Length: 340
Image 1 (cartoon, rainbow, N blue to C red):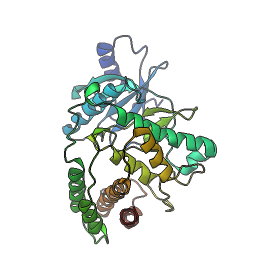
Image 2: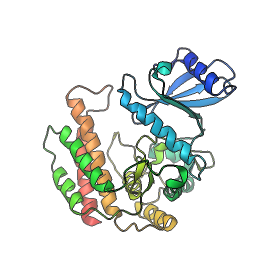
Image 3: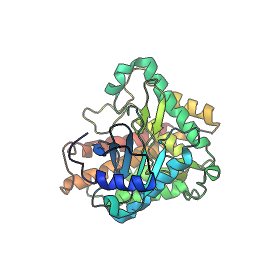
């Protein structure tokens, strides 16, 4: 662990709060390092030399509205921890911004690997890769089997009109970053609106369910599902559609979008859908819509990044090619919707 603490986390202040609220948990001075990855919130590994924990907080200098995010994330992992869904044990929620400059929470450190690319999966070989991906589907089935009311999450979202609201929300996101003509994007948005499926009964959904948001152990089993910042109550097939999208081959050299579909042994999307249908008992006949919606959503996210890049508002490298990816995602969305 680094000698100087990373920005956004003061080990002494954190120790003071842990000693106050969880006496006896920490046995020595704390040190911390930032864990790379994650969509927006900051994640740190913290240790006293004997035990390890993870701290999550909003980005530096972020608006205080994200205090809500910390509470929501902590609430959902606290609710799911006693269930069959593997999540880290929640330890402490601190909403006092005086401690670290923003609300934060502490959870158990889980050992495992987040696989982001086909190259990273290669050493596992075909059989182990296949087992890991099928396990990813089985864990999604477990999540969607949780009764929200039974775990205290009955009011965790507004499931009525969920798909219509999602589609309108991402349409607004697209309008907010329009500065060039994008062939087919309005056609895709309109086609999705015309063919809204009838949602099954709502469940707790993850919102960003994919292989690199879980930790896989040496036994190829899922040890923890991470990054719950987009979780809510809604249509469970949106989680499956996103997983299917990430399982489609996307052969673009240097693509910043992590897809593992090229790994030997990776199950085809059809097999993942069949496994989910068999495990959950849900009708997946409309999955093409949900997958096309996932392509649309990612196209909008990428266009937003491209828009910020053109304004000089991105930090770091690798953004110059993102704009070229957007039409590919739109085309995949249209094709998925047309071909079913």
